[in-house]
Image (tube, rainbow, N blue to C red; front, side, top):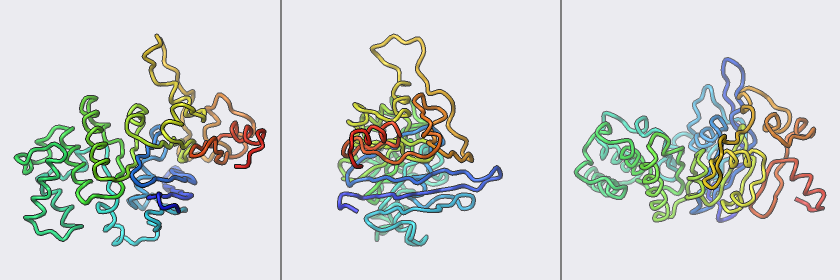
Length: 331
């Protein structure tokens, strides 16, 4: 594991046992997050993005969920080998998570400063007075005045609630922040304010971030690298520049083509035909093959491996595996 790698996921597999069978939520997932880097995690609903995040936090509900294989290396140590006491020490202090709905993340019966105090005293040797002062400073950092520190969550707007959640996530200066669609419940103007705030604080604190989203516009503004996820696995991984100038996977191309273009008068938006596979469905070949406009016979027979298009940019697609063989390169 390189020195620059803060987080490295190797061959992660997560399943849920439900009445209808087994849901294969994450399949052989491999991912790297470097120090001070923002990784955009993009895909449709049900692709496995949140399950991956919950796996990193070791918060998969069991039952019905279970991590059945792989490694999650954080600073070189496998989180899957940590016991619950060790994970409680890591959550909040080293890795924090910002959830998409701030109302369900906050305790409605506690004042907002007390919720930050609780996090601070859990991980830092602070008395109540010092923790309260630190909480007020954190609220000011995210744009909330001290006078409102003793208010309850219901007294805040959606955007202000999300700022409180961000303050709690940043309380212990974590090395990694996982933001799970943090602006979904907010209107467009407030979304921009919250994302600007997160980017500013991340840069100031020199932390890394995984941003889970389905919005390629947010990815373009904030992220350094991007992982495109489909049916529980990463189908394309690249730097932001590589992905936006040379998208390769047919699914990635479909996502880009479905975005409205300002310079073209379009009556209908392009769409990706079909639907993602059922979570309980076992697909022998490439999971995208039933929807892919460039599907070949081999795509239905077996799963593609990772082919490097260039350094730092890989794609799981037989179209590029074939090109690689024709070019005589050894990947």
